[in-house]
Image 1 (cartoon, rainbow, N blue to C red):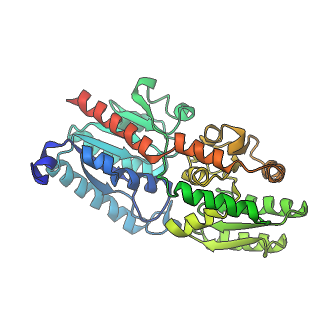
Image 2 (cartoon, rainbow, N blue to C red):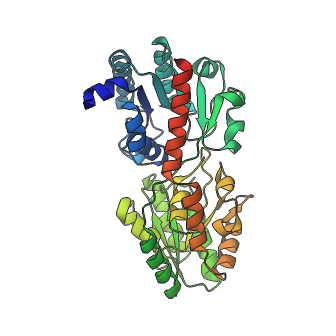
Image 3 (cartoon, one colour):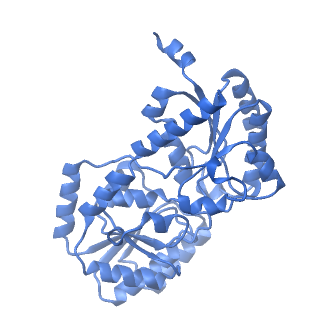
Length: 372
């Protein structure tokens, strides 16, 4: 049977959500699932990118291009629903603010075409009002952790909710990882890493405070900051604070790094510093990236982070969300023996992307079967 007939025979799923650019966690997850060989072998997929921002600085802002983009997405959505005729719409929906009402409009269009919708949220603080109840009526929801059910329980009974933790594709072989451990054992300087977008809410300033405290303890270290700037103002704040703490030699900004460059930095890292207070934090991929390279993570109790760092060897979490706690935790951990191999084994057992793909396929199968 040729590919054309196979595509016609397979059930069709339309992906609605955020895709690259810009690069951030939710877009990365959507790209992973849409490009998954496992999922594409099972279903005939198509997608509509609903985000119009090209740069991170545009996120959360309104402009004429975004308003025009809404009508463009509406037109493409109506056309795709009529021509592609999906059996299921998989919708990574925004959780609040203007973006939620925009996405809710797209969901109502899907309902007008009598399409089955499975929503997936990658952040928190879901708007809960009359419009929300209309949008989510007779639909299912995917969340990233059982601990996040409280975010949606007023809109969804538990039997209407699926749990699907994020996964990450393994990017390093066992042979390469063995070399990484050997290099870490031999070097004398401790390497810390802040790896996220350079947002104040993600902890770029708290990370500097942690570094200053560690320096005062006489620990020889280097901390690399990797990510794109939120704004010129935050860049100035960070640069001035670094100068105030006299950390120009220890704290180095490397810019935004992706793929091989990012993995090379992770290979040299001993500890991930991730003091995020971002209000929509959910199940950060950066923690999985660190686990993949056998790196313990030190973060705040935010979203599902406490459930991810749920054993002492994986790192530690400040329940009070104080940078002083993390500085103390890291200082104490530096004195202990590395458990990099154990952390990586935990990643391979629990957090591979292939596990998430299989779970998503099961969700799709169940929903399409129920819908007929």
